[in-house]
Amino acid sequence: MPASSLLGARVGTDAALIVRRPWLGHWRGLVLPLAVLVLLEALVRLDWIPAHQLPAPSQVGQTLWWLAVGGELWGHIGVSLTRVAAGFAIGAALAVLIGAWVGLSRRAESYLEPTFQALRAIPSLAWVPLLLLWLGIDETPKVVLIALGAFFPVYLALLAGIRNVDRKLVEVGRLHRLSGVALTRRILLPAALPSLFTGLRGALSLSWMFLVAAELIAATQGLGYLLSDGRETSRPDLVIAAILLLAVLGKLSDGLLKRLETRALHWRDSFVGGEG
Amino acid sequence: MSALLELRGIRKAFAGQRVLDDIDLSLAPGEIVSLLGPSGCGKSTLLRIAAGLDQDFTGGLAHNPLLDFGGGTGIGVVFQEPRLLPWLNVAQNIGFAAGRGADAEWIEQLLEDVGLAGQGGKLPKQLSGGMAQRVAIARGLYQRPQVLLLDEPFSAVDAFTRMKLQDLVVGLADRYGIALLLVTHDLDEAFYLSDRVLILGGSPSRIQRELAVPLPHPRDRRAVELAYLRGEALTELTL
Image 1: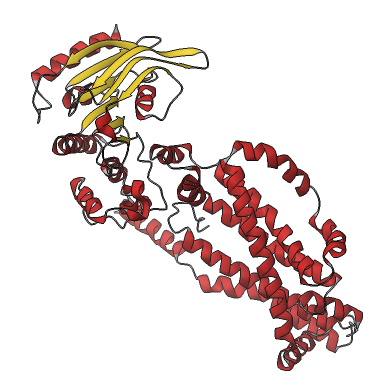
Image 2 (image 1 turned 120 degrees about the vertical axis):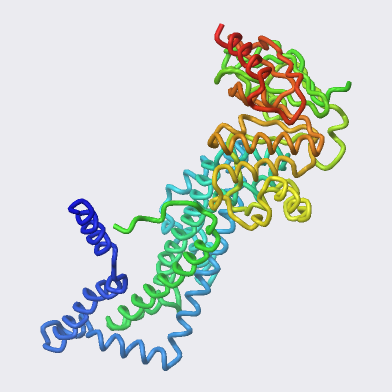
């Protein structure tokens, strides 16, 4: 029968299309960086690029190794991680508190929103000189700067999230005569959670950015310090090693937050992207 | 005052446009009353006023002091959509009024009552429309209300599910001695379920006619009396 064989053939091609090799996708992603590494190594070894400008990848690896064996590396990573964690936690916590308050109360919004709008227009790095003047050059100004950077993405995302909560769900809360605090805790915050997580992840990447800014300016330890130390001592291998570490830490911390997000939002019934 | 819920001379306007005019309605214990009317006639608005969700009206709304006994407001509400909180599972949704201190045994009983025994751990996204509405009904009953307000609760499900849910609600109302106030645009539903049907219409809306349905429950959907009453209502609505 031609009809059924046609149908069969069609099913066959569909099946062939559906069979995918996801592991290939991972390997494909490695092709470009590996090729660049090999090329760089060759160019430096052949003296086409001077090593004091761009160290060979193997040189960077060696620098990392020595830093790790000497124990110096863990101190830098520890200090930077502590600063990011403290700044991010303080900024995000304040943003959740104030964002929830402003989201719930029109009065709070009309008092606070214009001021926040104005503050948000200031690039956060512009605060650096002032922070240094006021708070000196120890830990406090660094943590404050990171907190400042983390605050706005979380605040804005939470406010938008709360304002987008389905009125019908809020009505369920009203029906059960929930107070403002209970309504926030039991309906508004959970409903705004997807938006809040988007804000948190944006805030985390900004926290790393401000960490580097703060440590470049005044620090005796940390990954940012490693960057400026490498520049001052003309050691590009140190600079590149620090950049690599920042990339790894940024990716790991974002991955952690993403896992938290997936777990907290398992109830969500939404589009997760197509196969195409 | 013997009525559980009494609305007197209710007037309501949206942006200067009057939608409800001088509406009187009372609900006696155990009674089933339907508000029937075309869409946009303000019947849902009237229900929201009765539920206390809309405070912007003129007229009198009286709750029988009996309603204040017990845990909640004495009034349960089931909306057109289930309105379940998607981050809570079925059991947590049903016991929402009590939060973490919810009575697990009572929730289990309600789950069984609505035909969802053992499904308390599911999330709303795993439920079909009919199942979600069953959960919403169970949530409406959690605080042991004496009045249940239903806003077109069966309009979003298919015809067979609708019939099952109608029987379910009437059965539960009878078992727990609950009075029902039902908003609907479905003639069959109104007469099959109610003791009294109030027909809302006009502009602004008034109660055009009140039809009593003097038939005992359970009823036969094919009963001649129901067909006659449906005809009367249809005449009123198409005038």
